[in-house]
Length: 170
Image (tube, rainbow, N blue to C red; front, side, top):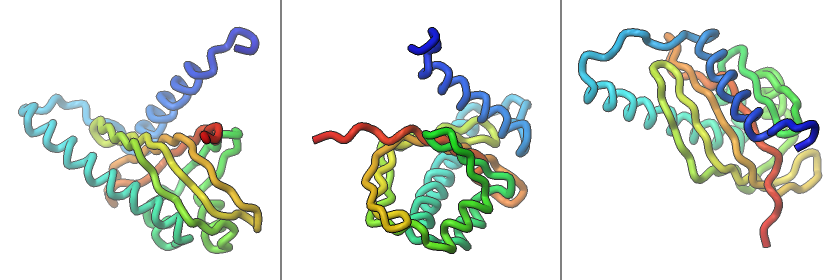
């Protein structure tokens, strides 16, 4: 822990703050308590299924460099923070897809969890990405967190954060 800072705790706090910021910026939470808890749980489960399918569609769009699908899924003010601390916006994501700077053999996730709070959903999963970028091969596994917000046009991916690549296991 350099300088006494707990980086895991700071990362968790950053993700929570980012999710709250996304809620504030992209539609907020419903503040009315549901009259029927069963209905609320059912609605959350249905929303979780929709968001899980949308996140799978996004991973497939990245793998296939499908700029049209990426454009449809990402919010206009989308931000991705990489494990190395670089921020990318929607325009950069679209440019990379159109330029096909990366080609993928694999772009799939496992260990996915989707949590829904009103109009906000948070997806956490372990991603395996393998391919080449600008002619250089890569084969990495990393954790990511994606934040989706329900808008008048449906669910949109508003914020993502990725871990550093995990150490290779043999």
